[in-house]
Length: 329
Ligand code: AMP
Ligand code: MG
Image 1 (cartoon, rainbow, N blue to C red):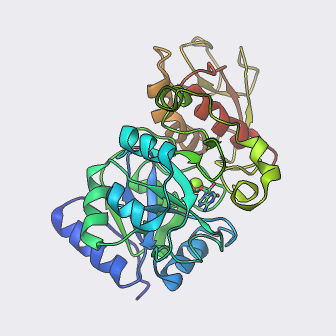
Image 2: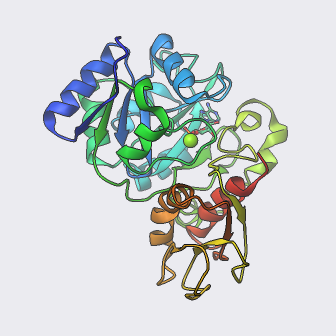
């Protein structure tokens, strides 16, 4: 694969065909999903997957999510128990990732799984992502298309800012609408376990399961996959340059603001204030979160006060990302 300047192309049938060809040849193609932009490579190819780890600066012990076209394709890759099938039927295509034992004969390579006997699978709903997976005709390993530890990209421009020449093609499909990553559920244990809160709410999952999800943190002692749920689970991740002060009910002198529901009000002479959702809508706040963190960095904010975000629904994922964004680097 030649390594020229990254090409940015608006989503079109030609761009998708070109992307699929690059993927089959072992290249890296960034594309929009409904959650954030993904950095895709042929999940069956150790050489292609190695390029993902290198481009992101991601440690190779952190496994990747494989994106597949549908439930049938998922069942070729993993042994899905009854609870997983119920969740898949309810939420695929959509922002749900299932971690399950890999199927004998599955194609997702060991490097993509970071050597684990489990595999993480997702069926995205975004039309560009679906078309690309179908055209490539194979599972596509795709973590978020940012440098490891940085804020996830929700536009094609963010991808170029982070990865530039490290990717062969960026397909521009406009803003990723949900704005936070998929919810990851492990079905390796007796009961489904929430490994990472995300764009699909706990409440929606538990309604289908008719039972509470096990907590993610408790899994760390289990060994195997649960112990390895880096990088989205490391203390510092999704991190902007600015320092964040969470649960702030007012702006201090010199602080920029990341507001929610107009809590800070408009003050003269203070730094910029971006409101995640003036109407206090959690979906809108999730969609704006990474965009605004990057925007505050671009405006040179060094200290950012972040208004309290309710813990319910999508607030669980938003607060999770904010805690990691605020953690010492
Ligand atoms: P990212 O692609 O950066 O959004 O992160 C994917 C998440 O899925 C990471 O936290 C991984 O550790 C987790 N993951 C991927 N594959 C597995 C697996 N086989 N077992 C457990 N967790 C996984
Ligand atoms: Mg990521």
